[in-house]
Image (cartoon, rainbow, N blue to C red; front, side, top):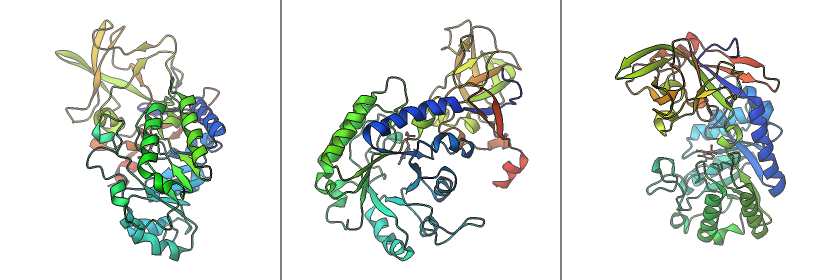
Length: 402
Ligand SMILES: Cc1ncc(COP(=O)(O)O)c(C=O)c1O
């Protein structure tokens, strides 16, 4: 067990991020596409040096992410949101700034979600004198996902403009087209989406200078068909050789690259054994409840901070699979602050540590201080296996938000 890591803590593993970055760098090399980091999935400034060499920039969903991309991660900064306020736009263009912020443009690409927003901000863009490439997010109306909440092409979706709604619209001045429709999917889903996109929007594609095919490409997952992705991108490039192609994955950069380590505070009984941890599901891994999904977890006395369990780890099985079944739950007041039911080779005791896997993506960015529960500290494990404390949180962090 890594000494010195007080719990709860996120431990981000530099070696795992580098492994992911090498895979994405290879896709760039093979296809000539540009690869952005979607900051919504991972926005840890201390990890920027691990990614800076590989990313071509970032994509931001807000002014604050754009500022982070611009100031810390570097390269190009793209922005997209379902809608921007006039105030957002002035900050993105450097016409206004928050206290302590330099007054300079934060972005070089912006993607609008509607023609009305494009028309609204066109004069401001011209007035700002900044060189910002403007694009439009389209909805190819082709669903690859089964869960409507994560499907931007679900009926009634507000994300992206449909072809029928572009008809007759004013497109002059727009140089890019963007779609984002995938979620943790393989290259076959991308291939099908791309062909629907080309069929639906074909008449405009000749004039487009940059395409952004979004995130959701699970490129760094074992078994992802990288050759098929590269073939799809190469084929598209052959058909539209004058345009730049962007992908903007989030998860793929930090897949399996971080953990949340927690300590068992108590074990209570109510028909089942319930281990109460110092990490809360609702505060520290909200996607477990929102998606919902079941995180992988292990117990390993020799754990050294690595993102993956070692050979001696006791990995949490399904209930009944191993000798001791236990419900893992958080310390908050929410009855549903339950991570799930697992089984282990030996009983869990107060003081034992559990390590939840794959917690770098979307987890660290979504934490809350509900119940005033302390946020997990953040650690970075370097290539030599040493973990360094990046950030610890205290009362000031709790109270300053409210
Ligand atoms: C517009 C856009 N781009 C990129 C991403 C990143 O997706 P992922 O983290 O699944 O790769 C998202 C995720 O929601 C998104 O909405």
